[in-house]
Image 1 (cartoon, rainbow, N blue to C red):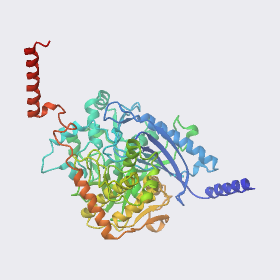
Image 2 (image 1 turned 45 degrees about the horizontal axis):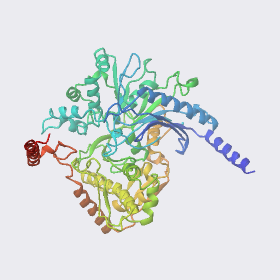
Image 3 (image 1 turned 180 degrees about the vertical axis):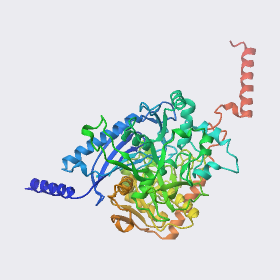
Image 4 (image 1 turned 90 degrees about the horizontal axis):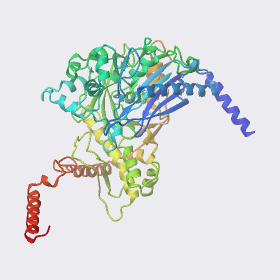
Length: 602
């Protein structure tokens, strides 16, 4: 009887699904510290309910210390596999895949690919960038990885081969005229695509030759996937959207086009760049691939494209000036919608394009700040100190004590990032007493994530001039209720978490479904489905919140200045770098040799 009723409920659910128009949301590649995944998810367009998903693990390659690469062909093949497997699962639910009305793409924004447009072959591995959290329906949305330059983790997080390229380029920027930042909103950094592309042009002969012979195409992962999925060598569409283009350092965020002066500065030929489109329009149609059985999804429009953090902003429905979201993963990404106004930060934040949801729709901008170490500090406690066996244990330990008992943890493993930008800092745990135990340290680690988020939020408030009334959150760490309550207490504003955590996927789906010519998803405020939220209100008074925050800032100051030019970490480790000590040792050696000679000792 029980089995019969359960089966009947399943059949009723499948029947209900068949009655509803659907869309596929994101297909995406999701980056983690040691591995990468393509993840494909299918949502119902009326209810935003997750119907099916599939993910495939992708390897990362580390050819040299500080180098991080991925195989573009493996990424593409995993996309095909995810599509096929998800379509099979939909069939098992008696959902006809003809209900899939559109495909969207959400991707990590800075990973760089160059390929041959005549053969379709990559000319080198994808040069990876930092990774951020976020996962991703029937609109099909493709998502490809993401993240933060995570200080103190491993080289997985940031490919550092372009450091010398950045140093050489920085010498050519006049001190009083940083035209790169004024046009792009970005600092000159190894993080962004232009310097990765410059490195490929300088160091990979296959890339150089293809550019000389007009065979090369450049793109971030979204461009590579869209070109391949729309036909590749047989008429594939070479394009990107404004959010991904804005992370290349070649794109003028004011004119919304590739900038000739920037391309000349980086010596990038403009003919290899993709066409820049809005985040919501039909770019092309899915073409049959030998990798897909029975031409699954052939003819379905690819109509949405957003960088992962922009997709999360859209998925959180942060469409108003001053609305912000924070994504908690290995690091944190905090984006604040600044509307049509391009706000330049005076406190170490980035200015970026938030979204442009249609060819004739206005562009929206955002301020972005990142916390380098969030979930990474939990892994450090697990892998380096061994005080927990799994990441989930951190909440249990913190709950046992409910306080850090005056212990503060600054996880500046490789320096402090925004808003300090202090490379001399190193991680410290301070305020220890004989009473301190691993539970207090676990609590302090969670507090550290929240304090760092507050520092970014304070910088945003100063730049925007409008304090946030609440913070919307998503990402893997938001399942930790202690962390979410601490965040509300430390910010002293409510923290709001959607019950449906796939906000990156949802944002990409919304963009794809809303595109002109698809029209299965309305983005009008009155038509947006209400999303169930979990709300965390501050449970301490404002004075206590400020005391804890000011004590944290004292701890941060104590973390600075640990690395000096004479330290073994950054300078000459030789004992002879100290002249008095070196003179003493040399003179002692001479005296010893002389004594042995006089005494006749061989």
